[in-house]
Length: 324
Picture 1 (tube, rainbow, N blue to C red):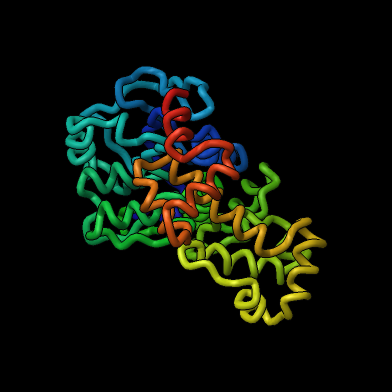
Picture 2: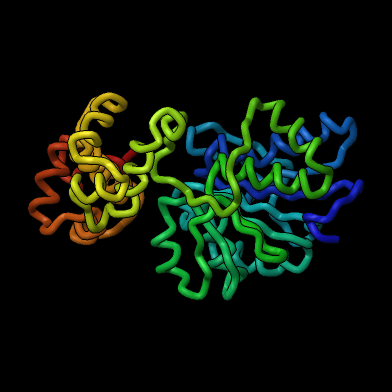
């Protein structure tokens, strides 16, 4: 039976949690199922948490998460969800990838949560299929797996394969599964348990910046920030951004000062350097490539700006964070 078909039958779910996963992402994977069982007053989701070796997986917040067992050949069921986060390449060897390939036909649906999509792709499950991953990794994911139709959507459903880009998109995905299987009212009640306002479509793009209430209180500033996000590699001038939003430069600067306390140009510069910092810490890209990706015309200009922003060079920051 399809994962998304209306049914009263329980869903058998195996959740593989890797070290480095986000506690919040693990929670948005598991708690909607728990909440649905509570709302429906019976066990419509039956989940089993496993780790690669059966030992506790240390999450990104350094909390150890003990599972119910190890990833093993005898597993099967309706849904296998692979939850992963930082340093995903370190935690899975070729034997585990081979095991995932063997398990694939034993589950009706297989899903990658956040960096779980990387494991699915490395196991060869996503070739010629559509998928997403966390927005920070979309470009690298596409480069690493050119045969995958990589989308910047919050979550992607492609037949028997699903993927979600992070904690909040995973909540949206799980609510979608609940809605399809048990109806709108049940999904609304589950969302209400967590005071969660589900306001996103699956195809909504994953943002670099979560704008929160700013989209409502000052949509013109929110639109300008979204334009900045899309032009980090090829930065636009404040005048060009103002034209796209339909404002004068002076009016845009007034709105930014009123809502964010700084000029558009200063905000954009910080956004580019925050993007650069993430690339320094979370990737092995050369500094020259990071400079290009964040819109700097030369490595020297990037190095000066980055040092002012971070208090040290990119290379020094990378060495320091690798020791933590």
